[in-house]
Image (cartoon, rainbow, N blue to C red):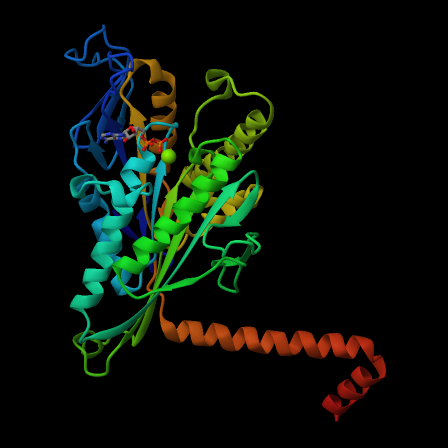
Length: 404
Ligand code: ADP
Ligand code: MG
Protein backbone atom coordinates (compact mmCIF):
# COMPACT_ATOMS: atom_id res chain seq x y z
CA UNK A 1 0.00 0.00 0.00
CA UNK A 2 1.45 3.37 -0.99
CA UNK A 3 0.66 6.63 0.80
CA UNK A 4 1.98 10.18 0.51
CA UNK A 5 4.61 10.69 3.18
CA UNK A 6 6.74 13.82 3.34
CA UNK A 7 6.56 14.35 -0.43
CA UNK A 8 7.65 10.79 -1.34
CA UNK A 9 5.36 7.76 -1.60
CA UNK A 10 5.67 5.65 1.55
CA UNK A 11 5.10 1.92 1.34
CA UNK A 12 4.96 -0.78 3.95
CA UNK A 13 7.48 -3.59 4.16
CA UNK A 14 5.94 -6.45 2.19
CA UNK A 15 5.99 -9.63 4.29
CA UNK A 16 5.29 -13.22 3.22
CA UNK A 17 5.47 -16.49 5.08
CA UNK A 18 6.73 -19.73 3.59
CA UNK A 19 6.36 -23.13 5.20
CA UNK A 20 8.84 -25.72 4.11
CA UNK A 21 7.70 -29.32 3.66
CA UNK A 22 8.27 -31.92 6.38
CA UNK A 23 11.58 -33.75 6.11
CA UNK A 24 11.50 -37.57 6.46
CA UNK A 25 13.12 -37.67 9.87
CA UNK A 26 10.92 -34.96 11.42
CA UNK A 27 7.95 -35.39 13.68
CA UNK A 28 5.21 -35.81 11.09
CA UNK A 29 2.46 -33.79 12.77
CA UNK A 30 2.11 -30.17 11.70
CA UNK A 31 1.97 -26.92 13.61
CA UNK A 32 1.21 -24.37 10.92
CA UNK A 33 -1.18 -23.97 8.03
CA UNK A 34 -0.25 -21.36 5.40
CA UNK A 35 -2.72 -20.22 2.75
CA UNK A 36 -1.74 -18.31 -0.37
CA UNK A 37 -3.87 -15.29 0.63
CA UNK A 38 -1.27 -14.75 3.37
CA UNK A 39 -3.14 -16.27 6.32
CA UNK A 40 -1.05 -18.41 8.62
CA UNK A 41 -2.42 -20.25 11.60
CA UNK A 42 -0.22 -21.80 14.25
CA UNK A 43 -1.26 -24.57 16.64
CA UNK A 44 -0.58 -28.15 17.57
CA UNK A 45 -2.66 -30.47 15.46
CA UNK A 46 -3.87 -33.79 16.81
CA UNK A 47 -1.21 -35.93 15.17
CA UNK A 48 -1.50 -36.47 11.44
CA UNK A 49 -1.02 -33.99 8.67
CA UNK A 50 -4.56 -34.39 7.33
CA UNK A 51 -5.97 -32.43 10.23
CA UNK A 52 -6.16 -28.69 9.89
CA UNK A 53 -5.11 -26.43 12.73
CA UNK A 54 -8.04 -25.60 15.04
CA UNK A 55 -9.74 -22.33 14.10
CA UNK A 56 -9.23 -20.96 17.63
CA UNK A 57 -5.40 -21.04 17.25
CA UNK A 58 -3.35 -17.84 16.74
CA UNK A 59 -3.83 -16.45 13.25
CA UNK A 60 -1.55 -14.03 11.41
CA UNK A 61 -2.13 -12.17 8.18
CA UNK A 62 0.71 -11.44 5.75
CA UNK A 63 0.87 -10.01 2.27
CA UNK A 64 1.40 -13.47 0.80
CA UNK A 65 1.57 -17.07 1.94
CA UNK A 66 3.61 -19.83 0.36
CA UNK A 67 2.56 -23.30 1.48
CA UNK A 68 4.62 -26.47 1.40
CA UNK A 69 3.73 -27.04 -2.27
CA UNK A 70 4.78 -23.54 -3.40
CA UNK A 71 7.35 -23.25 -6.17
CA UNK A 72 10.51 -21.15 -6.38
CA UNK A 73 9.03 -19.41 -9.43
CA UNK A 74 5.91 -18.31 -7.46
CA UNK A 75 8.20 -16.94 -4.78
CA UNK A 76 10.19 -15.02 -7.36
CA UNK A 77 7.05 -13.53 -8.90
CA UNK A 78 6.19 -12.10 -5.49
CA UNK A 79 9.43 -10.04 -5.35
CA UNK A 80 9.59 -9.27 -9.06
CA UNK A 81 7.97 -5.80 -8.75
CA UNK A 82 10.77 -4.71 -6.41
CA UNK A 83 13.41 -5.99 -8.82
CA UNK A 84 11.72 -4.28 -11.77
CA UNK A 85 11.71 -1.08 -9.70
CA UNK A 86 15.53 -1.13 -9.76
CA UNK A 87 15.30 -0.20 -13.46
CA UNK A 88 13.40 2.94 -12.43
CA UNK A 89 16.07 3.82 -9.85
CA UNK A 90 14.38 2.47 -6.71
CA UNK A 91 16.38 0.54 -4.11
CA UNK A 92 15.09 -2.88 -3.13
CA UNK A 93 15.80 -5.33 -0.34
CA UNK A 94 14.83 -8.96 0.15
CA UNK A 95 15.39 -10.54 3.55
CA UNK A 96 14.92 -14.14 4.64
CA UNK A 97 14.26 -14.69 8.32
CA UNK A 98 13.54 -17.81 10.40
CA UNK A 99 15.06 -20.57 12.51
CA UNK A 100 17.90 -22.74 11.19
CA UNK A 101 16.57 -25.34 8.79
CA UNK A 102 13.41 -23.39 7.96
CA UNK A 103 14.31 -22.87 4.28
CA UNK A 104 16.00 -19.44 4.16
CA UNK A 105 18.98 -20.55 2.07
CA UNK A 106 16.79 -22.80 -0.09
CA UNK A 107 14.41 -19.89 -0.79
CA UNK A 108 17.19 -17.36 -1.41
CA UNK A 109 19.11 -19.90 -3.48
CA UNK A 110 22.48 -19.01 -2.07
CA UNK A 111 24.04 -22.46 -1.74
CA UNK A 112 25.67 -24.75 -4.33
CA UNK A 113 24.05 -22.99 -7.29
CA UNK A 114 25.71 -25.25 -9.86
CA UNK A 115 24.12 -28.38 -8.39
CA UNK A 116 20.53 -27.15 -8.33
CA UNK A 117 17.96 -28.24 -10.93
CA UNK A 118 16.37 -25.21 -12.70
CA UNK A 119 12.96 -25.48 -10.94
CA UNK A 120 14.66 -25.42 -7.55
CA UNK A 121 16.78 -22.37 -8.27
CA UNK A 122 16.17 -19.74 -5.59
CA UNK A 123 15.41 -16.02 -5.51
CA UNK A 124 18.91 -14.61 -5.89
CA UNK A 125 19.94 -16.43 -9.10
CA UNK A 126 16.45 -15.80 -10.50
CA UNK A 127 16.83 -12.11 -9.70
CA UNK A 128 20.22 -12.08 -11.45
CA UNK A 129 18.74 -13.71 -14.56
CA UNK A 130 15.87 -11.24 -14.56
CA UNK A 131 18.18 -8.23 -14.18
CA UNK A 132 20.56 -9.44 -16.89
CA UNK A 133 17.60 -10.04 -19.27
CA UNK A 134 16.20 -6.59 -18.37
CA UNK A 135 19.53 -4.95 -19.21
CA UNK A 136 19.72 -6.75 -22.52
CA UNK A 137 16.16 -5.73 -23.35
CA UNK A 138 16.96 -2.08 -22.63
CA UNK A 139 20.25 -2.12 -24.55
CA UNK A 140 19.10 0.47 -27.11
CA UNK A 141 17.71 2.75 -24.42
CA UNK A 142 20.46 2.89 -21.85
CA UNK A 143 23.93 1.86 -20.74
CA UNK A 144 24.32 -0.06 -17.51
CA UNK A 145 27.00 -0.73 -14.94
CA UNK A 146 26.71 -3.28 -12.14
CA UNK A 147 28.86 -3.71 -9.05
CA UNK A 148 28.37 -6.31 -6.34
CA UNK A 149 29.66 -6.67 -2.82
CA UNK A 150 29.06 -9.62 -0.53
CA UNK A 151 29.68 -9.47 3.22
CA UNK A 152 28.73 -11.39 6.31
CA UNK A 153 28.13 -10.21 9.86
CA UNK A 154 29.67 -12.74 12.19
CA UNK A 155 30.50 -12.28 15.89
CA UNK A 156 30.05 -8.52 15.58
CA UNK A 157 32.55 -8.33 12.70
CA UNK A 158 31.74 -7.53 9.11
CA UNK A 159 33.79 -9.72 6.73
CA UNK A 160 34.31 -9.23 3.01
CA UNK A 161 33.34 -12.50 1.33
CA UNK A 162 34.84 -11.40 -2.01
CA UNK A 163 38.29 -10.51 -0.63
CA UNK A 164 41.23 -12.04 -2.47
CA UNK A 165 42.89 -14.84 -0.47
CA UNK A 166 45.48 -13.51 1.95
CA UNK A 167 44.07 -9.96 1.99
CA UNK A 168 42.18 -8.28 4.80
CA UNK A 169 38.51 -9.14 5.08
CA UNK A 170 37.68 -6.34 7.54
CA UNK A 171 34.82 -4.08 6.54
CA UNK A 172 33.77 -0.86 8.25
CA UNK A 173 30.22 0.46 8.02
CA UNK A 174 29.86 4.19 7.34
CA UNK A 175 27.06 6.45 6.23
CA UNK A 176 27.44 9.09 3.53
CA UNK A 177 26.02 12.62 3.68
CA UNK A 178 22.57 11.31 2.63
CA UNK A 179 22.60 8.69 5.39
CA UNK A 180 23.16 5.92 2.87
CA UNK A 181 25.12 2.95 4.18
CA UNK A 182 28.55 2.39 2.63
CA UNK A 183 30.87 -0.54 3.24
CA UNK A 184 34.44 0.67 3.50
CA UNK A 185 36.92 -2.09 2.65
CA UNK A 186 34.42 -4.38 0.93
CA UNK A 187 35.38 -5.52 -2.58
CA UNK A 188 33.08 -4.01 -5.16
CA UNK A 189 33.28 -6.40 -8.08
CA UNK A 190 32.15 -5.33 -11.50
CA UNK A 191 29.67 -7.58 -13.28
CA UNK A 192 28.69 -7.42 -16.93
CA UNK A 193 26.12 -10.23 -17.14
CA UNK A 194 24.31 -12.98 -15.28
CA UNK A 195 27.29 -15.35 -15.39
CA UNK A 196 29.52 -12.75 -13.70
CA UNK A 197 26.88 -12.26 -10.99
CA UNK A 198 26.49 -15.99 -10.42
CA UNK A 199 30.27 -16.39 -10.20
CA UNK A 200 30.41 -13.68 -7.52
CA UNK A 201 27.59 -15.33 -5.61
CA UNK A 202 29.37 -18.68 -5.79
CA UNK A 203 32.70 -17.15 -4.73
CA UNK A 204 31.15 -15.40 -1.72
CA UNK A 205 29.10 -18.41 -0.70
CA UNK A 206 32.18 -20.61 -0.92
CA UNK A 207 34.27 -18.34 1.29
CA UNK A 208 31.38 -18.10 3.76
CA UNK A 209 31.16 -21.90 3.93
CA UNK A 210 34.94 -22.38 4.06
CA UNK A 211 35.26 -19.93 6.93
CA UNK A 212 32.32 -21.56 8.68
CA UNK A 213 33.86 -25.03 8.31
CA UNK A 214 37.17 -23.77 9.64
CA UNK A 215 35.31 -22.56 12.68
CA UNK A 216 33.49 -25.85 12.82
CA UNK A 217 30.10 -24.24 12.49
CA UNK A 218 27.52 -24.15 9.77
CA UNK A 219 27.05 -21.19 7.45
CA UNK A 220 23.79 -20.26 9.14
CA UNK A 221 25.84 -18.84 12.03
CA UNK A 222 26.33 -15.60 10.11
CA UNK A 223 24.12 -13.03 8.42
CA UNK A 224 24.99 -12.79 4.71
CA UNK A 225 24.32 -9.56 2.81
CA UNK A 226 24.82 -9.31 -0.95
CA UNK A 227 24.49 -5.81 -2.39
CA UNK A 228 24.15 -5.15 -6.10
CA UNK A 229 24.38 -1.59 -7.40
CA UNK A 230 22.86 -0.98 -10.83
CA UNK A 231 23.75 2.31 -12.52
CA UNK A 232 21.93 3.37 -15.63
CA UNK A 233 22.66 6.14 -18.12
CA UNK A 234 19.75 6.70 -20.46
CA UNK A 235 20.63 7.57 -24.01
CA UNK A 236 19.57 10.95 -25.44
CA UNK A 237 16.32 10.52 -27.35
CA UNK A 238 15.43 7.28 -25.53
CA UNK A 239 11.74 6.79 -24.72
CA UNK A 240 12.32 7.35 -20.99
CA UNK A 241 14.22 10.62 -21.64
CA UNK A 242 11.37 11.76 -23.87
CA UNK A 243 9.00 11.06 -20.97
CA UNK A 244 11.10 13.46 -18.92
CA UNK A 245 12.83 10.84 -16.78
CA UNK A 246 16.32 11.59 -15.44
CA UNK A 247 19.37 10.77 -17.52
CA UNK A 248 21.12 8.83 -14.79
CA UNK A 249 19.56 6.64 -12.11
CA UNK A 250 21.09 4.25 -9.61
CA UNK A 251 19.52 1.44 -7.59
CA UNK A 252 20.80 -0.76 -4.84
CA UNK A 253 19.47 -4.29 -4.39
CA UNK A 254 20.21 -5.83 -1.00
CA UNK A 255 19.75 -9.60 -0.65
CA UNK A 256 19.95 -10.88 2.90
CA UNK A 257 20.11 -14.40 4.33
CA UNK A 258 19.84 -13.88 8.08
CA UNK A 259 21.33 -16.29 10.63
CA UNK A 260 18.97 -18.78 12.26
CA UNK A 261 16.80 -17.49 15.06
CA UNK A 262 16.86 -20.62 17.24
CA UNK A 263 16.88 -20.49 21.03
CA UNK A 264 20.01 -21.54 22.94
CA UNK A 265 18.02 -23.68 25.34
CA UNK A 266 16.74 -25.72 22.44
CA UNK A 267 20.02 -26.17 20.59
CA UNK A 268 22.03 -26.77 23.77
CA UNK A 269 25.00 -24.78 22.49
CA UNK A 270 27.96 -24.29 24.83
CA UNK A 271 31.35 -22.51 24.87
CA UNK A 272 32.34 -20.68 21.68
CA UNK A 273 29.10 -21.65 19.94
CA UNK A 274 27.14 -20.33 22.88
CA UNK A 275 28.91 -16.97 22.56
CA UNK A 276 28.35 -17.06 18.83
CA UNK A 277 24.67 -17.74 19.25
CA UNK A 278 24.39 -15.00 21.89
CA UNK A 279 25.79 -12.67 19.25
CA UNK A 280 23.39 -13.93 16.60
CA UNK A 281 20.60 -13.35 19.05
CA UNK A 282 21.95 -9.87 19.85
CA UNK A 283 21.85 -9.06 16.14
CA UNK A 284 18.33 -10.43 15.77
CA UNK A 285 17.28 -8.75 19.01
CA UNK A 286 18.64 -5.43 17.75
CA UNK A 287 16.69 -6.05 14.55
CA UNK A 288 13.55 -6.80 16.58
CA UNK A 289 14.07 -3.61 18.62
CA UNK A 290 14.33 -1.54 15.44
CA UNK A 291 11.27 -3.29 13.99
CA UNK A 292 9.35 -2.57 17.22
CA UNK A 293 10.02 1.17 17.05
CA UNK A 294 9.53 1.38 13.29
CA UNK A 295 6.27 -0.55 13.36
CA UNK A 296 4.77 1.42 16.25
CA UNK A 297 2.82 4.31 14.78
CA UNK A 298 2.76 6.36 17.99
CA UNK A 299 6.54 5.91 18.43
CA UNK A 300 6.97 7.07 14.84
CA UNK A 301 4.71 10.09 15.38
CA UNK A 302 6.82 11.36 18.28
CA UNK A 303 10.02 10.61 16.34
CA UNK A 304 11.26 7.96 18.78
CA UNK A 305 14.90 7.00 18.31
CA UNK A 306 15.43 3.83 16.23
CA UNK A 307 18.38 1.91 17.75
CA UNK A 308 20.08 1.05 14.44
CA UNK A 309 23.49 1.65 15.98
CA UNK A 310 23.07 -1.12 18.57
CA UNK A 311 24.44 -3.78 16.23
CA UNK A 312 26.33 -3.99 12.95
CA UNK A 313 23.50 -5.98 11.42
CA UNK A 314 20.99 -3.19 11.99
CA UNK A 315 23.48 -0.55 10.83
CA UNK A 316 23.87 -2.52 7.62
CA UNK A 317 20.14 -2.91 7.08
CA UNK A 318 19.28 0.66 8.03
CA UNK A 319 18.27 1.81 4.54
CA UNK A 320 16.12 -1.28 4.01
CA UNK A 321 14.12 -0.87 7.23
CA UNK A 322 12.28 2.41 7.48
CA UNK A 323 14.47 3.95 4.78
CA UNK A 324 14.87 4.45 1.07
CA UNK A 325 14.01 0.99 -0.32
CA UNK A 326 11.19 -1.31 -1.32
CA UNK A 327 11.62 -4.11 1.16
CA UNK A 328 10.33 -7.67 1.04
CA UNK A 329 10.73 -9.96 4.03
CA UNK A 330 10.25 -13.70 3.81
CA UNK A 331 9.48 -15.41 7.11
CA UNK A 332 10.50 -19.04 6.72
CA UNK A 333 9.12 -21.67 9.03
CA UNK A 334 9.01 -25.39 9.50
CA UNK A 335 5.61 -27.07 9.60
CA UNK A 336 6.80 -29.78 11.96
CA UNK A 337 5.06 -29.71 15.34
CA UNK A 338 8.46 -30.12 17.03
CA UNK A 339 9.21 -26.54 15.91
CA UNK A 340 5.94 -25.09 17.20
CA UNK A 341 7.49 -22.44 19.47
CA UNK A 342 10.04 -21.21 16.88
CA UNK A 343 7.37 -21.06 14.19
CA UNK A 344 5.11 -19.04 16.46
CA UNK A 345 7.99 -16.66 17.32
CA UNK A 346 8.94 -16.25 13.64
CA UNK A 347 5.40 -15.32 12.66
CA UNK A 348 4.99 -12.88 15.55
CA UNK A 349 8.22 -11.15 14.60
CA UNK A 350 7.34 -11.01 10.91
CA UNK A 351 3.78 -9.79 11.52
CA UNK A 352 5.21 -6.69 13.22
CA UNK A 353 7.56 -5.98 10.29
CA UNK A 354 4.48 -5.49 8.09
CA UNK A 355 3.80 -2.18 9.82
CA UNK A 356 7.16 -0.66 8.90
CA UNK A 357 6.85 2.19 6.45
CA UNK A 358 9.65 2.81 3.97
CA UNK A 359 10.04 5.84 1.76
CA UNK A 360 11.59 4.76 -1.52
CA UNK A 361 12.67 7.53 -3.88
CA UNK A 362 14.24 7.49 -7.34
CA UNK A 363 18.02 7.76 -6.90
CA UNK A 364 19.05 10.29 -9.51
CA UNK A 365 22.59 10.54 -10.85
CA UNK A 366 22.62 14.35 -10.66
CA UNK A 367 21.97 14.05 -6.89
CA UNK A 368 25.14 11.94 -6.77
CA UNK A 369 27.05 14.71 -8.54
CA UNK A 370 25.75 17.26 -6.01
CA UNK A 371 26.76 14.96 -3.18
CA UNK A 372 30.22 14.36 -4.62
CA UNK A 373 30.65 18.16 -4.96
CA UNK A 374 29.54 18.69 -1.35
CA UNK A 375 31.90 15.97 -0.14
CA UNK A 376 34.80 17.53 -2.07
CA UNK A 377 34.00 20.95 -0.58
CA UNK A 378 33.82 19.46 2.89
CA UNK A 379 37.18 17.74 2.42
CA UNK A 380 38.74 21.04 1.28
CA UNK A 381 37.27 22.88 4.28
CA UNK A 382 38.49 20.18 6.68
CA UNK A 383 41.99 20.36 5.19
CA UNK A 384 42.06 24.16 5.42
CA UNK A 385 40.86 24.02 9.01
CA UNK A 386 43.48 21.50 10.06
CA UNK A 387 46.21 23.50 8.28
CA UNK A 388 44.94 26.64 10.00
CA UNK A 389 44.97 24.87 13.39
CA UNK A 390 48.68 24.15 12.87
CA UNK A 391 49.31 27.79 12.00
CA UNK A 392 46.98 30.04 14.06
CA UNK A 393 48.62 33.25 12.81
CA UNK A 394 47.76 32.19 9.24
CA UNK A 395 44.16 31.66 10.33
CA UNK A 396 44.02 35.14 11.91
CA UNK A 397 45.44 36.63 8.70
CA UNK A 398 42.78 34.82 6.68
CA UNK A 399 39.98 36.08 8.96
CA UNK A 400 41.44 39.58 8.76
CA UNK A 401 41.50 39.43 4.93
CA UNK A 402 37.87 38.25 4.90
CA UNK A 403 36.86 41.23 7.09
CA UNK A 404 38.53 43.74 4.77
P1 ADP B 1 18.04 -22.52 6.56
O1 ADP B 1 18.84 -21.78 5.54
O2 ADP B 1 16.86 -21.75 7.04
O3 ADP B 1 18.88 -23.03 7.69
P2 ADP B 1 17.74 -24.49 4.47
O4 ADP B 1 17.34 -23.59 3.36
O5 ADP B 1 19.14 -24.96 4.48
O6 ADP B 1 17.39 -23.82 5.86
O7 ADP B 1 16.70 -25.71 4.46
C1 ADP B 1 16.82 -26.86 5.28
C2 ADP B 1 16.49 -28.11 4.46
O8 ADP B 1 15.14 -28.09 3.99
C3 ADP B 1 17.35 -28.24 3.22
O9 ADP B 1 17.64 -29.61 3.02
C4 ADP B 1 16.46 -27.73 2.09
O10 ADP B 1 16.79 -28.30 0.85
C5 ADP B 1 15.07 -28.16 2.57
N1 ADP B 1 14.03 -27.21 2.13
C6 ADP B 1 13.83 -25.97 2.63
N2 ADP B 1 12.79 -25.37 2.06
C7 ADP B 1 12.29 -26.25 1.16
C8 ADP B 1 11.19 -26.22 0.23
N3 ADP B 1 10.39 -25.14 0.12
N4 ADP B 1 11.01 -27.30 -0.54
C9 ADP B 1 11.80 -28.37 -0.45
N5 ADP B 1 12.83 -28.48 0.41
C10 ADP B 1 13.09 -27.43 1.21
MG1 MG C 1 20.90 -21.23 5.73
